[in-house]
View 1 (cartoon, rainbow, N blue to C red):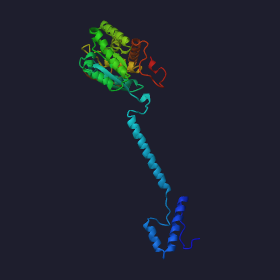
View 2: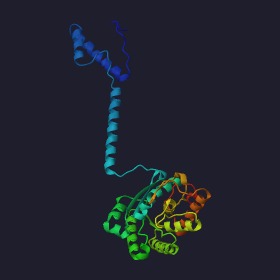
View 3: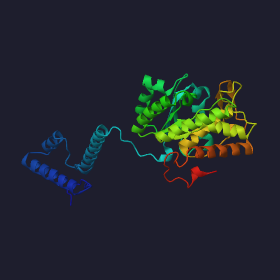
Length: 339
C-alpha cells in the first residue's frame, strides 16, 4: 500500500524493476539521513535520473548488437572486394551476350556486315544477344594487322567468345602460305584467351563461279589444318544467286553487295556463331549500303523461307562434323538443327 498517494509505475522487464527498486531504496535512505526531502530530490536531479523513471537497457543493447553486426558485414565485404576484385555474380547463359570480335578490312564495314550481323540476330530472336566489335582498316591484310600489333592487343584485352578473321578477298589465291601464318598466329592468341576462332570466307565478283570455288577450297583447307570454323559467306552468296536468278546479291559494280547480299554474308556468320538457322524478315531490316540506305530486303514469303534453309544447309555442308556455336544450357532440344 502506498501511503503518500503516488501512482505505481509500470515496468517493461525485471531489470527495470530492479533498477527502480534500487533507486528508490537509495532515495529513501538518503532522505532518512538528511533533514527534509528536497536535498534528496536535488541529488537525483544532479545525477540525471528520476527515482520514479526506470532505466531501459534492453533497447540500447539491441541497438548495440545491430551496429556491431552491420560493422562486421561492411568489413567482410571490403575484405572480399579487395581479395577478389573480379568476382562476378553468376548470370544465366541466356542473359549473357555472345561477345564477337571481327578483324578484317573495309570489305566488312563498306558492306555493313557487322551491323547486319546484329540485324540478323534480332530477326532470328537469337537465344543470346550478340555484342559485336569490329577492327577493320581499308584494304588491310591480316599480316598488316599483325605488324601493327593492334589486333593482338584487342584479342588479349578481354575474353571474346568468338574471334572472326577476314583477310583480303584475293589473299587465299595470291599468298596462301602468308595467310596461313597470319591466321595461325592470331588464332593462337585468341585460343590462349579461351576464344573460338572463325575464318570468314570472302566472295568473288559476280559471275566468277570458278574463282569462288578456288577461294573457298583454299580457305576450307586452311581452316581444317588449324581446326577452326568456317563462315562461308562467298559460298552462300553464289549458292543462293545461282538457284534464284531473281535475287541480286551485288550492286552495279558487281563486287560490293546489295542489301540481300549483306544479309546473306551476315547470316552465314550468324549461323556459325549461334548454331541457329537465320530468319529473313524484310520489315525488320535496315541496310546502310555502299550506294545509300535501303529500307528493306526485297525477299519475302516462300522465297525468304527457301533462302533461310539454303543458308543453313550450306553452313553445315562447309563445317562437316563440327559442333557450331556455344554450349547451350537447358536449351530447347535440337533448336539449332531446324531445317
